[in-house]
Length: 408
Image (cartoon, rainbow, N blue to C red; front, side, top):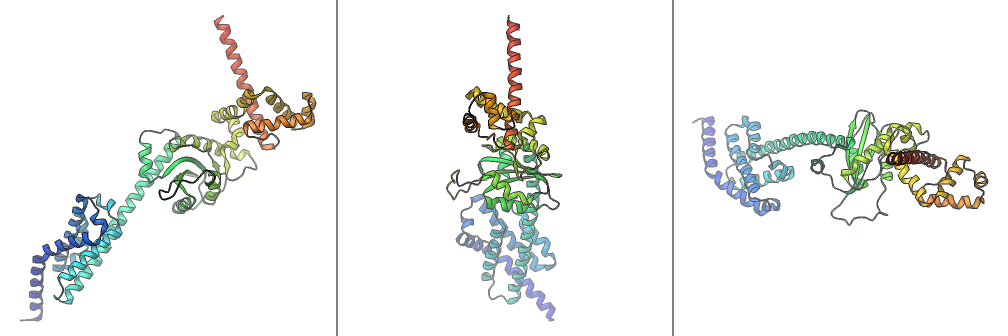
């Protein structure tokens, strides 16, 4: 009998023996999985059964490969075809490699004494399975990444257009958003080379969630305070302001202006912050010394002149109405002070009061609305609010008088 004939007979005998003990190896493998892998023991019965199918398929395919090693890539891929698609989402690559290791260990124990050639075959085949597992998970991650990118672009576009619907919260949750409340929208230019992963890593260090939208030359970030379940919620004094967060993210934007929308209490209201940020970004060039980043509310005069109704309403409701409701003297003093080039003496002469009275009233203006008329930029904001407020009041008076005439 030749050596080749003897080798063939030995291989056929080994294959027959492997097929006889395949069931015992599968049973021992499942028992070892439950004893040694806590994540497997804690799985629901359905998923545990699916993992068991993968282990059994691995043992069966090894026997087929041992019979014909040229089929290694195809057989190894068939192992994971036995598992339901959802198993990839519940079992990590690390856990899959642990599964392969346990199966190999049990198989080695069962074949001990059958020769080194069989043990080497198992090690070679386990390597093929490990590479195949990495390929399967890499393809799944790539598909998931593309799907996430499309979904994220859809969510950001929905926020920018304000066309929110009932599906928005579920879409945001699918992206892994952990925000617990306040959000703000940051708008700037897209740099020539933009690294999304770097932005996400920086945002995590700052304690915020981020949705990223690249729209040609415009880059939009939706920022939300991230909640860490393992830590107590920080107080308002401990939290970074969104302006500070925007400053930390500023290097990731291209050249040009960077505008931060007002803070909203919930993500579903982020479209209001987005509208303000976009409107501010459109007119930011008209403020020569605008900081980077700049808050959209600091661009209220420019936005109002450009026809932004939200800016007009904000100026009237946050400046003119409170002053008018508090005291007509404050409105009169502020008008005079601004018309006289912010001169205390000229204002005092026009109003027939002492300059200290003017100072006191301007201090009251600042207390009531939060803006200081003595600064050049804030003076522009206040003067725009007075003009818009007086126009609105005049229109209101005319409409009321017309209504009275119609009734009479």
